Length: 354
Image (cartoon, rainbow, N blue to C red; front, side, top):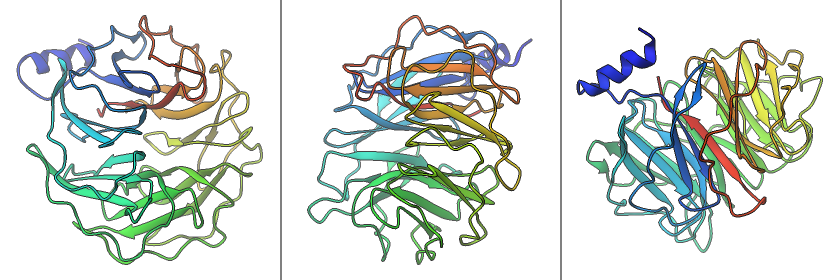
């Protein structure tokens, strides 16, 4: 029996949420589309939309580590929504948190901690707003919001991620220093020193590798992607890749084993993937069928067998088999994510956890 069929039986028997899925945030209502996913086969029939429609275009997605909750942040008022999730699809939306650290309508990054005990988002800092909103999380939903860090940013947060061991929290932002990291232990510690040299411009994507020994940020100015060693602080910046991404890079994603790093970007071929071993290797060949426009987000499946790219132009999501290079693109889903323009299209993509 294949693993997906076994998981489906476990789900029917009342076990963990089981059917692997791929979720896409996009700029048209309902702002999030979720599909069953089977490696080697591709997209299943799109799940029904949530009964609660998000208030604005989807910016980022995070599944809880156990796969039982799905968080979406949006550009609309009350810009974080969390639903219960199972093999049946969207469940009941959790009650909104009692306290938000923002009054603006822009929430751009979201992440569950590795143990699922905390949920963080970053957002626009306008009119005295804070940069972070972080809450304890349980099956009951949001807890009491954590206090802000003593040192924070001044513009707006783009992406946020806990370190793989949960002992740090990092965020990228639109103004210098463009990336910051804080110790985390059910609350913020004193911010780590900024990297030197740092980021050249607007920090978009940000991510640790699989074991937390490297941290990367993408940016809108050359070299478009910057990586440092990490060990309770930034080390000396790694050399830039010999072939740079072809334009402003909006996110990045490491493969589950940390041996590859994918960087979607503005210029053709819209996605660049590099081997990684304490530095960038030679860029992999482009896929034979390119994403149709600016790459906004990428995600490897939990087993590393597939690589998804969310992009600006229809069909808004492209997925490829991955094995030290691109395979033949999977067929598009029968129901595409809904987009209202070519300004954003497919904004973010995430596979559910294994």
